[in-house]
Length: 342
Image (tube, rainbow, N blue to C red; front, side):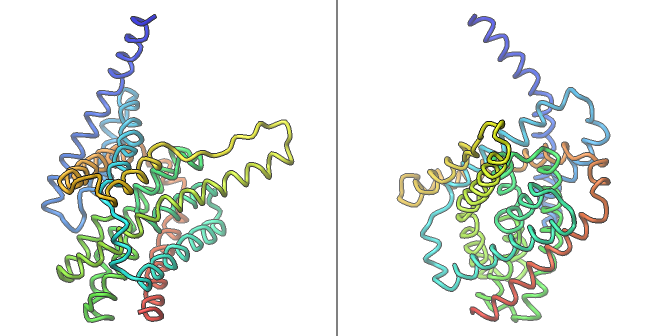
């Protein structure tokens, strides 16, 4: 029995290796290219390269299991390690008004994504993934939310691709808005960039175009958004669970299957708490941040390879309109809240 089990695991590992190695190679190459094209960044490059190669050179079945492993398991590990880099003390650095701005900005973004997406005819799961990705922290938020709401791989892959492309465009637009509207004033410029952009890398890259002080403060805004990830996921988990219970009442033949929070979300929360109370040393946290970033890049390469052009074409112009509307609305919400709160 043990020999059979060992052989079974060995076969499973062998099936994963080809696709995993391709994703790692694409990720490392994207990191290198990102040094020459910082406005794009390694994350976007990894998705685009994965999208191109996954639809052309590496579209055979031999790569599939390794790609699936990269886009799911590696991203889960990345999310857990990310928690070991975040401290709840950063909330105190922004004060009440800063945290209020973030909460309102996130809520408005989520509501907009859900309502407008429904008007455009997108599925509920796709709308939720777009909401969490744009409101919280891009790929990591989508990767953490997808299993909780039982989203399919197509919705997950396409939402991550669209969110990252939207963030890349906004990353280059927001510094000009900060300069023209706020004359690069630190708090307002930081709130705009840190409160809107989807990934930490996009926030750092965009804010660095303004100045170093804005870069540091915008990063704090972004980190506070990430800290709220656990609560957003719990909220959507409860929403989906309640929906199932309502359906269960009308269809008694179905067995109730309540949504559970996955292990990596719990791991994220525990790591964040451990770092906040000093159980994780600073040098460990720095290492976790670097490893988490690399794992995310490898996962994004796998996500890009999972997206098929036929699926994107099926979404059509409608998905482009949806992305544009979300991006514009986020900027409008942020500007309005900045003028009201700060």
